[in-house]
Each structure stands twice: as structure tokens, then as C-alpha cells.
Length: 384
Image (cartoon, rainbow, N blue to C red; front, side, top):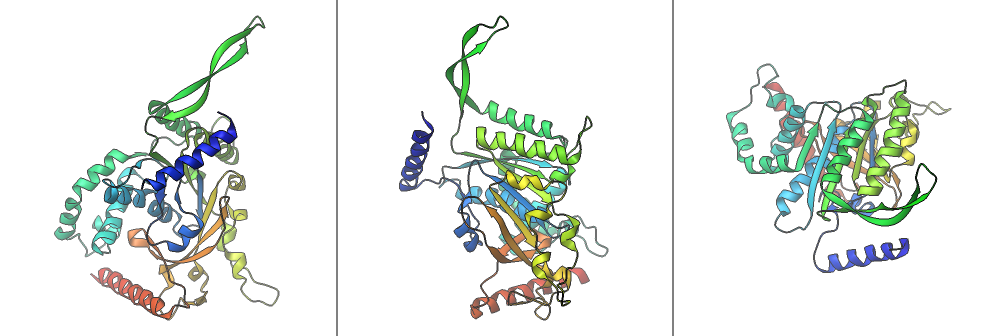
């Protein structure tokens, strides 16, 4: 089939699926109306780059959008959707157990409105031990957690780019086949010999969305004289692109932003230049070339880190928004437009939600009221 016939067939096939009530991508979380207008969902064969300065929440956000959300959405819609999900999570920074406990904290908040950090769940804080009632709520989620076990593979012992590539490729090869097309090659005698060449990968389940998360790529191993920069380049521009283009993998690479984004910058009048503080592709750490490969780049900005009291209409100081405010920035969108979105961030639970436009005062006051209540709950836990 020609390139144009194949493209037309894709358009027609998607149209027919939608008309039949079928899903063609994993929808964005319901808390993200504005994001959905720019990026409709988690689509097969797309490469995401998620970045931020240290301790701003890039891992929490990538987990919320690409790990926790797809699993919760599929669990709630497993009898309604045609989509299936597999997540290959290469965790280079934290252990399998730590990821599992982070998921517990997230579930306790989104399902039961209970705020308890992973540290408190493990009774690490002096004078605080986890309540039996929390253990019972986690036990109550046994069916969901068993379901997660079937959908997720967390790999924390493969750190080299080629190892991640081959392990991921083996998964696809075990779950699909290739169409073949006639071809020729020259043998050792220089004679042309007829052969069959791999043409198109055909998954056994065309509705399976495979999400490949690597967190974070600055922790990739590099060997045989290669530098970290060279290893990241090979991983991104060769391995990730091949997985995306040949197998329609959903690539999610988390990348540290450089230290320059954490330093205050002033203009010639001594005024803080906020735009110079916001993360851009030029501040990607260890290797800026990854931005050439991605379909989307998302980054997070924390204005409170720079003692900014007011930002985009939000009072970060007197209304106690401070640590609960982040700005989600779509730096790159090769399939649509970019925008900046204010959001509420609850670090203890790894939870993000869009904040309302401050021109809508009723929604703004409701959002502030909820944030104050969250702050009060966290302070009460801290005092225990």
C-alpha cells in the first residue's frame, strides 16, 4: 500500500471507529479541559518529553498523566472501551516498591480524598504511624491492584540505552508479526538474490496502547567511551524513534532541566525577569537535542521558588497557594498549538489539576477554598 493510501486508510478507519462509539486514544484526565483542547489524548506512536528543574514535580506529573491516569481510566472503563494498555516503566531513580507506594498515596486521594504521603504511609515520621483504616482502604483496592500487576512491568535493573531498547523491542516482537515484501540483496558472490523483507509491524491487538516510560534519561548508563550526551542522543534519536515509528510505542522520557533555570534573572532595571526563569527547550540538561525528536515537550514552572508573591493573577503568598501552584507549559506541540496552564499540585499524593481562569471569580474562590482545606489537612497531619 502506498504512503498516501495508508494515510487515507488511517483517517477512514479512525472515523469509522469514532462513529461506532469506539475509542482511538486514551483520553486526557477530566481535570484537564484546557490541555485537551491542545492535545486530545495519549495517542499511539507519539513521543513525549517531560522536563522541569529539580524538585519541581516532573516525575510526579509524568506518573500522574502516563502511569496512574491510564490505569485508573482503563479500570473504570474496562467494560466500555476497546482500548487496552501496557506500561513498560524503566525506573532509573526509584525502586519498584517506591513506585507502588506512590500509587497507594495517589489512590487514597483521588478515590477517598485522603492526603497521606508515601513517607507517612511507611510510618517514617516521628509520632506518626499509619492508621489501620488506611490499610483497610488499600486492601479494598486489591482487585484494582491485581489488575495493575497485569498491565505494568516496572524495570529497575536495566539502565543502558541498548538494554532498554532491546527489552522493549522483544515485547513488541512477542506481541505482533511483520508483513513482508519482495526484495533483493547481493550475496558474497555479488549476485542479486530474491528475499522477503520486513515491511509493516502488525500488533496482535491493534487496540493495545504501549506506554514506555524512562525516568529519568540523565541517569542512563554510558559505556565503551561514550559520554552521557552521546548515550542520550543515541537513545532518543535512534532507539526511541525506532520504537515510536515502527511499533507505534508511546514514548515518555523524563528529563532534568539545567541548573540555569533555577537561578534568578534580572533585567537592566533590576526587575525580576520571570520569562527568563520559565523552562524552555534550551534548558534541557545533559542533552538539548532530544527536543528535535519529540512530538510534545511539557515542562513545569514553580514561581514560588523565586519568592514571587503574585503570578498570573494568583496570589501565591496571602492565599497560601505557594507550594500547591505549578504552571504546566506545552513547550513543543508538533500536532497543534502551545499554551501555559495554571495547575494545583498536591505533592504528597502526586496529584495535578487545572486551576480555573482567575477571571471566573466563583471558580477561583472555590479553588482557593479547596487549597486552604488541603493545606489545613496537611498541617494537621504534620502536627501529629
